[in-house]
Length: 435
Image (spheres, rainbow, N blue to C red):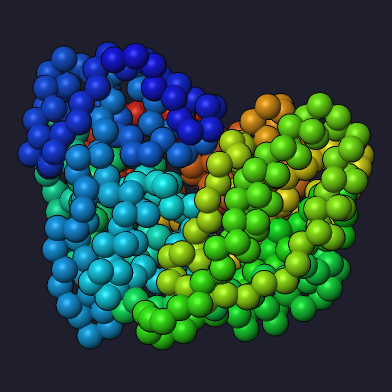
């Protein structure tokens, strides 16, 4: 095959071979053949990770043919739904809805495969909700020796903990069983505000709204707040009107926004003014729609991203320090800073492990060099024990990640046991997990 590239164009690979197995048996067979040749193997979904998690010079395995719902088992609170690991989130959401079901929480992008999203720690927002990995009840994984293992909290629990959020280092996931709930709607209320007032009432919004987040426009005191409230029942909905949706989502979030990024690239000195105008141009809107239609938004402006999980109490100081850092370095940033929240969980490598969490995500247009900006922010968030998103850009290594995760060495022990020869390793995984 030729050269594979991820969506952000931050990583590429020229593997020796490319395979598209249709199920666990075919995955096991190709892994066995690769082991005999001494090849490394990596699985890839949508390629939406900003890191080199899927890079390999060996065999690149597409999960696209391992997709769809395999089984639905009703429960008292919804259903346990087993799905193929390569199922794209936007397809999964519609399939679940056809069964009267939904995922309890989602991120704001839905192009990823379910395995890729879970394996890199994808999350949404909501102080009472965990990331996607917290909704996984079982996985089927093909290990380096060719065995196919079904594991859960009661069957090989340590393998389950390592495999469900393991950044692809444990094996190749072929299916996941998700704890789904009855389909529900979200009432969305979006409004402009100031950063000062948003931080003043932060706990009221964070704890009192089901799914709260905000976007801060650097070099200004302007933010856009999003408050999503859960409503039982699937129908009817009151979605954004076609014209308003086109103006807000297509022009302001994609078309016009992309044009402003190009303008800021050519004339960085205009960025503070652009941000001020953009922040003031936003107008309130409210709508109600299917949960997944509110959670996710289209993103067609290509960018690079770094996201850190920090203790909630550290958030105001971190945002203040980022503003000061930009002023000190003279860096002009046209992308809003995204702030979201999550409940503490017990997933071994979850960025919200053991603590209620605020997420701070910084972005840069793909035509601008992001490195100095991200380095400035990374220094700030590391000072408050920040944990980087496994699928987004960062500069951390195994040595300095270990103290941030109480179960880090437990994870490495499982990896050492099931993949001692590092069939599923690559340079990125060697950096974050060691050799």
